[in-house]
Length: 405
Image 1 (cartoon, one colour):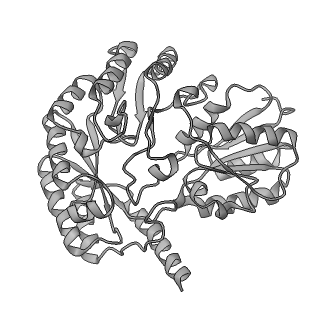
Image 2 (cartoon, one colour):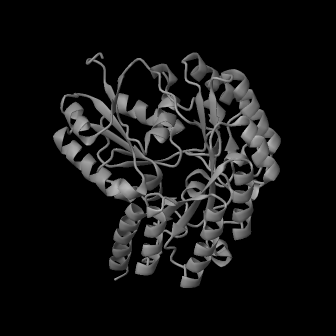
Image 3 (cartoon, one colour):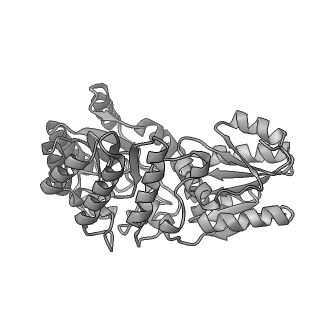
């Protein structure tokens, strides 16, 4: 690495790497600075201490923003010449939480904005006050999804934006409600690059994998999905594997039926399909803006199981409006899903900034509810970070109560 060049430092952690891949892909193969990936705070401290001119890129989710802010404060004290640019879901919704710490705060999509930041950083002194920049929606096909010139590949974002606007989810409010799809040829070119590098496990990122090619994101365009999968298979051949509708993506239940599940099974290699349910109560599903019913969930899981997939069904517990009756309806649906061979992926509700539920108070789960979830987990029928989410939600709940006082 040429130490005479300015350094572009990237806090590259497991939860944030896909977002940072997109930003680095937009920057392109620029020769005027070194890129250094740091995977821990300790590594970052060491690098910052030895860097004369450096810009640090940080992406932050809401559950980690306090730790990120504290880290950046320490780094600024360690190296006053360090430039800091933050983006991601939390700064996009609450830029004030990073003002006075970051020199540049990017709200929304960062592909175009990062170029402006780099230009300012190279040519001008560091801003005395935080500059808040509004990112513009981008055309996905105009940008590489990762810095391929560094040999970095990852799951391929095929759709950005979600039309449903669920009240608890940041996706629609961060990327908009008009879905944008990466053109098929741009996807296939990336697959070809991966294949040339002997990388033949192809994964896709989408709010709803089965929405690919849909003009409004609410109707199924299965021909577009089939074309995507069959063309990808043609490139990677039998030695490659396609993962579609599994992590880091999912499918909405009303898009999945028997025919769709059977056709998917012929083309993909994932053994499971992740189905977003969130609740088994139709009243609560309507309240949170999901746009589907509990029966849709049951039929989607049945279709997945009959085609040979393991349905992994997402549920969120502790919604502010959730009643004991809502919880019991969710339990009833879970029991039916388990009988079909499904697994349950559990989350605890967290009020995320930028969403309609941002200022609501999370409902504290009762001892009875916690015991039920614990029993399912011990039997291997339920998994997820719901206990960690619950602790974060409890902290958010206390902060909201204090603010209202």
